[in-house]
Length: 390
Image 1 (cartoon, rainbow, N blue to C red):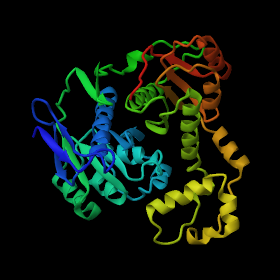
Image 2 (image 1 turned 180 degrees about the vertical axis):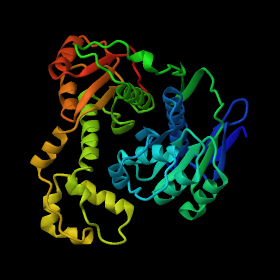
Image 3 (image 1 turned 120 degrees about the horizontal axis):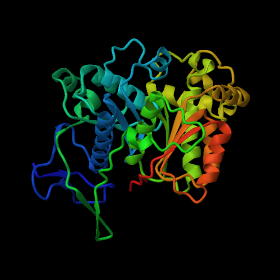
């Protein structure tokens, strides 16, 4: 197949639309459904992320994409009992690749609503069964077991998008795209992200354990395929907050930090103890938890809307309780796709329990950023490599 005609481009008025190769065959097969233009943008970007993450860590990897940026990414380490609860995976049989997707999806469940899923490994039935429960547009993987494909073909009334990619496909070294009728050309970003990038530790504290190195690598590979500017918070092998496409670095850090805080708060005893009405849909449960954690919840209680969601009127999670819970957290990693220009990014990151930072360095105020890390005992590595993606 050298080309595939699409229904339309980014919007219904953008016709004609297709994906094609100037020479050779497309490295993908559509096994089910009719993926669109944005679906393929998500599929091809997310596939690059999980492929590189698997190569860098040796672990199965998955990503949850929305509008050409990851809502979450993770490697396939086992889930704790609390993680199984907050990701609605209790009692499920989970393979390593299924664990990776459950964690990627669970990082920011609101942003992952209607996502595109990417898997570094063959999709097995365990992963397919979890995908079948979620609102998702499609999945890309190097292969599917017969049983997994059978499950996925029942999703969305048989219209779920299933794409298989040749894992051995290597794109051309030079890439092009058109903007306003003008063709742009650049060398593909083949920069390899691995542990050797983390040797330049510029802070007084140089204690960088192996799990933090893995999380730094995960953050950098995630950022490599996130619309810039971008900042990524990581904990225990999964991205838990991605701030994408912001014009200022501090806004990236705040946005990603607020998402990380929400992930941390989902594990608060009051949140874990919420009693939902029988038969509530997964998206409705996600929305209810998000509102409960937010500052708007007291207004919702006053309006009496809680009866539609909860069996018992939940006790308010106060601002003081939220702040105290987040203050107990530690071991988080933050990556940035370009240098931190000011120490305010470090100040914001450490409020969410960040102990490790990786960034390119190169700001005229690097000394101030390093001093801010030293004030809190944070370990920071400079990679010397910017990771803008547009």
